[in-house]
Image (cartoon, rainbow, N blue to C red; front, side, top):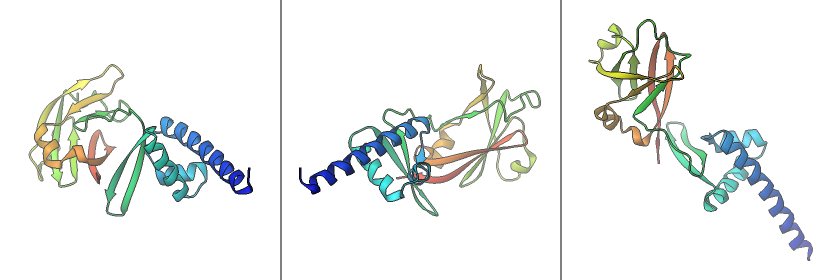
Length: 182
């Protein structure tokens, strides 16, 4: 083999080892951004982006690009990853106090074009901005609460194409749209 061929083989081995490491990270942490992956493996983001493109072409991972005010963010998932239903919201047991209120119903408020408020009882401050839609809650065996947002709200916010963040405070949840999928 010529020195050039040896160098090419060495680069291919390094790239393959990086791809294997990335696959493990992506399987253990679905939805990590290319930037976060680059920090975890201590490699340049452009190197990781190239490796992710190769993994996508080999159908080992899928990526979703999120458009945000700050720019584009590529999130990477293992092939076959089951994305949550965008209209189903799960509140973990650690963040809701089921006893007061009982959370038998969820009061859903369309607060503005990027925020949906969810509470287990009426919230007077939110009612100044919007009339609540009341939905029955589903209490799961693990202690969490699942709420199905009405189709009307899901369609209005176009949640199937949005990236959201769910935050919790004082036994309430705030679903905020943080970006759009390309």
